[in-house]
Length: 186
View 1 (spheres, one colour):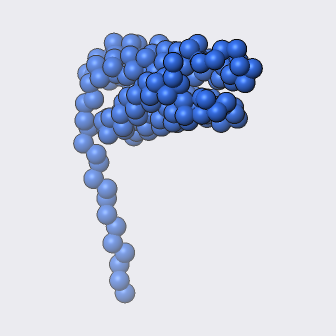
View 2 (view 1 turned 180 degrees about the horizontal axis):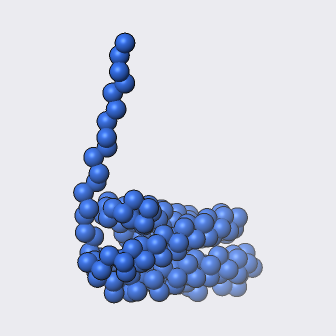
């Protein structure tokens, strides 16, 4: 008769992720949102009915995206104010972050679906594709941060891996918005 071997998982080391890292994330999303609006406002051939219709449809989706970014940007400074050594306050901030990012992930899917339904005129196809990639990267960033907050809130571990991934994805989104603006042309 053999006995079943069981192993006890070794808990992850509690890594202190300094909240100051988050300030850069807030600035990245603001920049990305501004670039998204720029794409709409600077669309070439403003008298073309297809471009006008596209701009109107895209403006609605971008307004939703900017609303999500605004909520994130309002959260970031509050989170940054919490000292890493203040356990009850940090736990509450992590729980707030989990609640917020869960909503951001869900609502960013609606933004993505709205963007995918828009058919751009041929002159704006590449800018639209890059805008979609930026929206996807933004959602991926929210998903990574949701994982970060979930581990911190439910498991009590601060693992900076997901925070790093989230930051990288939001930086990627900002770069994609810049590329979309350039692809839109003069």
